Length: 234
Image (tube, rainbow, N blue to C red):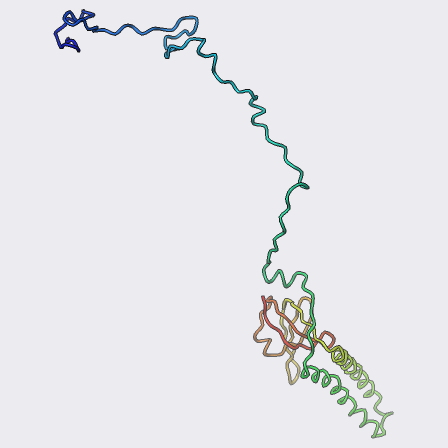
């Protein structure tokens, strides 16, 4: 081997270089005492028991350090103002929507008056004719039929007059459940059935345009069940 200091050839058994007196072997490392550690590597950094005196120890128990704070009662919380949530159109309109009123137009009032007096005029013509003929005793059955017809026409006239004198029509948001066509001998009547309003004569044009299950804003006279307008809103 060679000396790392002077690079002279030195025997492997020599502990120092004979030329420069350089230590060729490092001294053996100190081991721990049996009293401090059983393994030679137990005190690898050369510490003794006195060095451990200054080790920090927690002053608070672990259970107390992780203890959760007690929640405050709900009455002490800061309540933020409630946010208004806008529901879907169907839920808004079909929830607690109350009918509103709109003033009748002059044309609508004219139709109500016509619907009140025209049936009475039609009913008065046969009554006047029978009374002038003098055959009142021989046609008692005809009088019976005419009386029933007069009750129906009179009731419709009263309902039209009630809506006329109210001066307003109702505007209601309602769902159309079904449509119906009633066929007579020479005519057809088109009806729409609503959840809250009931049955209304909606006419042929509305009958061809409406959808069952849709929601409509309906303007109508409640006594005579006369439809003025309907518009789909949902």
